[in-house]
Image (cartoon, rainbow, N blue to C red; front, side):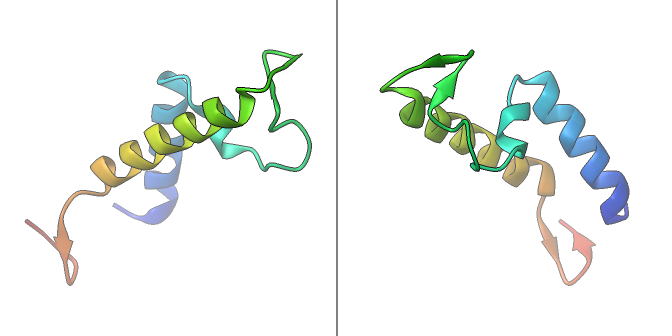
Length: 69
């Protein structure tokens, strides 16, 4: 599978899991959740990022020099 197709599938998976906000940059609204200011906004964003990271790792699969294990 090429990277372009994998990227589309990964984005769809993150959207499906409610983690699409992790694809956005931190330029302005990292401290707001659902439009409301929150002191726990950064903690919630960190939790979402951890979940997204785990999903990406799982979807990468085990590969060694281009061979799937």
